[in-house]
Amino acid sequence: QQLLKTEAQEAIAGWWHGTVSPTLGGYDQAFHFQDGGTLKCLVFDQEKDGKFTLADLEISKGSLRGGLKVDLGDVQVDYLFDSSPQALKLCCSMTSPERPRSLDGPGLIVMKPGKPVSATSGQTQGQLIQAYLTELCEIVDSQTAKAGSESTAKLLEEHGDGPPLNASQLQGTETLEDKAARIAAKQK
Image 1 (cartoon, helix red, strand yellow):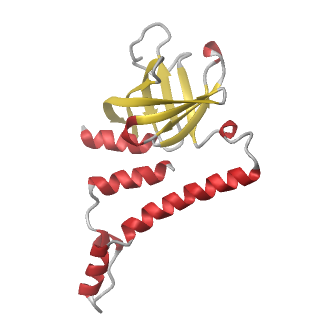
Image 2 (image 1 turned 120 degrees about the vertical axis):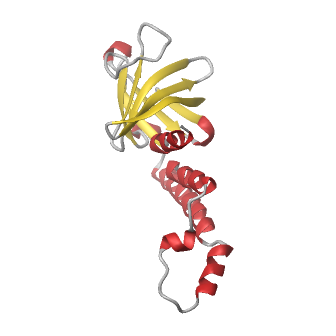
Protein backbone atom coordinates (compact mmCIF):
# COMPACT_ATOMS: atom_id res chain seq x y z
CA GLN A 1 0.00 0.00 0.00
CA GLN A 2 2.93 2.37 0.70
CA LEU A 3 4.31 1.74 -2.80
CA LEU A 4 0.91 2.57 -4.32
CA LYS A 5 0.77 5.73 -2.21
CA THR A 6 4.20 6.81 -3.47
CA GLU A 7 3.18 6.06 -7.07
CA ALA A 8 -0.08 8.00 -6.64
CA GLN A 9 1.71 11.00 -5.12
CA GLU A 10 4.12 10.97 -8.05
CA ALA A 11 1.28 10.62 -10.57
CA ILE A 12 -0.65 13.64 -9.27
CA ALA A 13 2.38 15.80 -8.41
CA GLY A 14 2.49 19.27 -9.93
CA TRP A 15 -0.14 21.59 -11.37
CA TRP A 16 -3.51 20.37 -12.70
CA HIS A 17 -6.30 22.62 -14.01
CA GLY A 18 -9.85 22.29 -15.32
CA THR A 19 -13.35 23.73 -15.25
CA VAL A 20 -16.00 22.49 -12.82
CA SER A 21 -19.43 21.58 -14.19
CA PRO A 22 -22.01 24.31 -14.83
CA THR A 23 -24.05 22.85 -11.95
CA LEU A 24 -21.20 23.74 -9.59
CA GLY A 25 -20.66 27.18 -11.17
CA GLY A 26 -18.57 26.49 -14.28
CA TYR A 27 -15.47 28.20 -12.85
CA ASP A 28 -11.81 27.33 -13.47
CA GLN A 29 -10.03 25.49 -10.69
CA ALA A 30 -6.42 24.37 -10.29
CA PHE A 31 -4.50 22.28 -7.78
CA HIS A 32 -0.76 22.16 -7.23
CA PHE A 33 0.00 18.92 -5.39
CA GLN A 34 3.30 19.15 -3.51
CA ASP A 35 5.52 17.03 -1.25
CA GLY A 36 4.38 16.13 2.23
CA GLY A 37 0.68 16.20 1.39
CA THR A 38 0.54 19.96 0.87
CA LEU A 39 -1.22 21.69 -2.00
CA LYS A 40 -2.21 25.02 -3.42
CA CYS A 41 -5.72 25.55 -4.74
CA LEU A 42 -6.35 28.29 -7.28
CA VAL A 43 -9.92 29.52 -7.82
CA PHE A 44 -10.88 32.92 -9.26
CA ASP A 45 -7.15 33.81 -9.32
CA GLN A 46 -7.07 33.43 -5.52
CA GLU A 47 -4.51 30.97 -4.19
CA LYS A 48 -5.19 29.04 -1.01
CA ASP A 49 -2.87 26.64 0.84
CA GLY A 50 -4.14 23.29 1.98
CA LYS A 51 -3.40 19.63 2.57
CA PHE A 52 -4.35 16.40 0.87
CA THR A 53 -4.43 12.73 1.80
CA LEU A 54 -4.74 9.62 -0.34
CA ALA A 55 -6.69 6.49 0.61
CA ASP A 56 -8.03 3.21 -0.78
CA LEU A 57 -5.62 3.19 -3.72
CA GLU A 58 -5.74 0.68 -6.55
CA ILE A 59 -4.56 0.25 -10.11
CA SER A 60 -7.51 0.01 -12.47
CA LYS A 61 -7.27 -0.28 -16.26
CA GLY A 62 -3.73 1.13 -16.32
CA SER A 63 -4.44 4.15 -14.13
CA LEU A 64 -4.28 4.88 -10.42
CA ARG A 65 -7.57 5.30 -8.64
CA GLY A 66 -8.64 6.00 -5.08
CA GLY A 67 -9.69 8.56 -2.54
CA LEU A 68 -8.27 12.08 -2.43
CA LYS A 69 -9.29 14.24 0.52
CA VAL A 70 -8.57 17.94 0.09
CA ASP A 71 -8.53 20.13 3.22
CA LEU A 72 -8.39 23.88 2.68
CA GLY A 73 -9.08 24.73 6.31
CA ASP A 74 -12.61 26.05 5.98
CA VAL A 75 -13.53 23.59 3.19
CA GLN A 76 -12.95 19.84 3.03
CA VAL A 77 -13.80 17.85 -0.09
CA ASP A 78 -13.59 14.08 -0.46
CA TYR A 79 -12.90 13.16 -4.10
CA LEU A 80 -12.74 9.91 -5.99
CA PHE A 81 -9.78 10.30 -8.35
CA ASP A 82 -8.47 8.56 -11.44
CA SER A 83 -5.03 9.55 -12.67
CA SER A 84 -3.40 9.07 -16.06
CA PRO A 85 -0.59 11.14 -17.63
CA GLN A 86 -3.12 13.01 -19.78
CA ALA A 87 -5.81 13.73 -17.19
CA LEU A 88 -6.66 13.78 -13.51
CA LYS A 89 -10.34 13.04 -13.00
CA LEU A 90 -11.78 14.21 -9.69
CA CYS A 91 -15.36 13.58 -8.62
CA CYS A 92 -17.06 14.83 -5.46
CA SER A 93 -20.53 14.02 -4.20
CA MET A 94 -23.27 16.62 -4.56
CA THR A 95 -25.50 15.14 -1.85
CA SER A 96 -23.19 13.69 0.77
CA PRO A 97 -19.90 14.50 2.49
CA GLU A 98 -18.73 10.98 1.56
CA ARG A 99 -16.57 10.17 -1.43
CA PRO A 100 -18.56 9.04 -4.50
CA ARG A 101 -18.17 5.52 -5.88
CA SER A 102 -18.10 6.40 -9.57
CA LEU A 103 -16.58 9.07 -11.78
CA ASP A 104 -19.71 10.63 -13.24
CA GLY A 105 -22.28 13.31 -12.58
CA PRO A 106 -22.05 17.05 -11.95
CA GLY A 107 -19.30 16.62 -9.34
CA LEU A 108 -16.82 15.42 -12.01
CA ILE A 109 -13.98 17.67 -13.12
CA VAL A 110 -11.41 16.50 -15.69
CA MET A 111 -8.14 18.31 -15.10
CA LYS A 112 -5.23 18.64 -17.50
CA PRO A 113 -1.60 18.76 -16.40
CA GLY A 114 0.14 22.11 -16.14
CA LYS A 115 -0.28 25.51 -14.61
CA PRO A 116 -3.40 27.35 -15.77
CA VAL A 117 -2.91 30.43 -17.92
CA SER A 118 -4.75 32.56 -15.36
CA ALA A 119 -2.07 31.71 -12.78
CA THR A 120 0.45 33.66 -14.84
CA SER A 121 -1.84 36.46 -16.02
CA GLY A 122 -1.00 39.90 -14.77
CA GLN A 123 2.72 39.17 -14.73
CA THR A 124 5.07 41.00 -17.04
CA GLN A 125 7.16 39.06 -19.51
CA GLY A 126 10.21 39.74 -17.35
CA GLN A 127 8.46 38.30 -14.27
CA LEU A 128 7.44 35.20 -16.22
CA ILE A 129 11.01 34.70 -17.46
CA GLN A 130 12.39 35.19 -13.96
CA ALA A 131 9.93 32.67 -12.49
CA TYR A 132 10.79 30.18 -15.24
CA LEU A 133 14.54 30.57 -14.72
CA THR A 134 14.17 30.26 -10.93
CA GLU A 135 12.23 27.00 -11.30
CA LEU A 136 14.72 25.73 -13.87
CA CYS A 137 17.68 26.49 -11.56
CA GLU A 138 16.00 24.65 -8.67
CA ILE A 139 15.44 21.59 -10.86
CA VAL A 140 19.00 21.61 -12.19
CA ASP A 141 20.40 22.07 -8.67
CA SER A 142 18.41 19.12 -7.35
CA GLN A 143 19.56 16.93 -10.25
CA THR A 144 23.24 17.91 -10.16
CA ALA A 145 23.44 17.50 -6.39
CA LYS A 146 22.39 13.90 -6.86
CA ALA A 147 24.50 13.25 -9.97
CA GLY A 148 27.68 14.75 -8.54
CA SER A 149 27.89 12.56 -5.48
CA GLU A 150 31.16 11.35 -4.00
CA SER A 151 30.08 7.71 -4.30
CA THR A 152 29.70 8.09 -8.08
CA ALA A 153 33.16 9.59 -8.35
CA LYS A 154 34.59 6.81 -6.19
CA LEU A 155 32.91 4.12 -8.31
CA LEU A 156 34.30 5.63 -11.52
CA GLU A 157 37.77 5.81 -10.00
CA GLU A 158 37.63 2.17 -8.87
CA HIS A 159 36.29 1.01 -12.23
CA GLY A 160 39.27 2.42 -14.08
CA ASP A 161 39.56 1.61 -17.78
CA GLY A 162 37.09 -1.31 -17.76
CA PRO A 163 34.03 -1.55 -20.00
CA PRO A 164 31.62 1.39 -19.99
CA LEU A 165 29.21 1.66 -17.06
CA ASN A 166 25.53 2.39 -17.57
CA ALA A 167 23.54 4.86 -15.49
CA SER A 168 21.95 2.22 -13.25
CA GLN A 169 25.39 0.82 -12.38
CA LEU A 170 26.56 4.31 -11.41
CA GLN A 171 23.49 5.32 -9.44
CA GLY A 172 22.57 1.95 -7.93
CA THR A 173 19.11 1.16 -6.64
CA GLU A 174 16.84 4.16 -6.20
CA THR A 175 16.29 4.88 -2.50
CA LEU A 176 13.16 6.42 -1.00
CA GLU A 177 15.11 9.66 -0.59
CA ASP A 178 16.06 9.59 -4.29
CA LYS A 179 12.43 8.98 -5.23
CA ALA A 180 11.29 11.86 -3.00
CA ALA A 181 13.85 14.18 -4.61
CA ARG A 182 12.72 13.08 -8.08
CA ILE A 183 9.08 13.74 -7.17
CA ALA A 184 10.00 17.17 -5.81
CA ALA A 185 11.90 18.03 -9.00
CA LYS A 186 8.98 16.85 -11.13
CA GLN A 187 6.58 19.14 -9.24
CA LYS A 188 8.54 22.25 -10.10
